[in-house]
Length: 338
Image 1 (cartoon, rainbow, N blue to C red):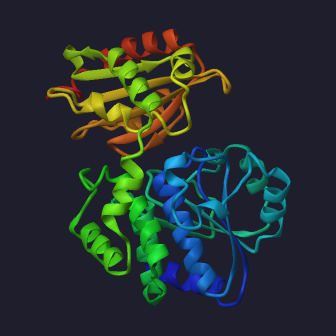
Image 2: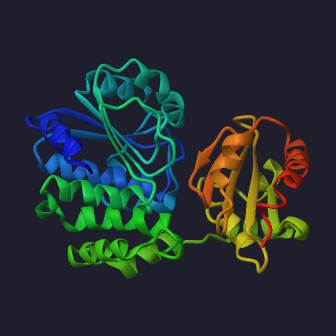
């Protein structure tokens, strides 16, 4: 954070405030971990803080300390409206455009509270009084650690915050293997372990919770894998019928796209997941090297994210979405060359 932002945040927090900390729709480990960690810190600083999510999150994240205290707009719309209306400050974490908050977007656009943005995705919108944006940092949870440090708040780093932030950093770095994982990231992780984060237990709670249905769904996804060697690309499709057959639960497809990316010679991987309830095709994109799935998703799928990891959506059918995707690839053949 730059000195001006640090000073501005200190002024905003110089007396007890009603604060709402908000993550994005379909929150992942980084959204949950960063929001809970920041809420915990601000609460210790004497503020009244509520963590709010647009909708529910996967069961494998619900063991995280204080996760059961999260309010979700999807289940508690009136309470959520009251929280946003009465907030003095709203922190938005792990997203940088209000359209990433689903049903909360309308409430946030008319909120009287001042906003503080903490996020590491590219091209942030200009809606916050204070913007802490850094696309070079691997996760928003690591940014929360630096935020605490900038406010001389690392003395408040307890085992709960350490666990919350560890989860966010670990999940957003693919267990510390993605390129944005730096020496600083590992120093932060060391500090979190020293503060009480049980790294072995956290890994088990996140990754060793597969149900038979999820493994069968993974088998279906891999059976649907298509490789396009001319474009060093692979894609996976999962239909609504296949989700239903395998008793899909939120979070079950997390990480599936990485199996496609893990193949030798593949630099671009994408998964198309049909969602009949929302009448969309949910899309996750991953890449290696310099090929920007952020730009690809922004260009074609009304999405975005990072250079090597992004998301988006299509309003065409699953078959039409795949056909369109294949027709687009020739335009990027040179960029996808190895």
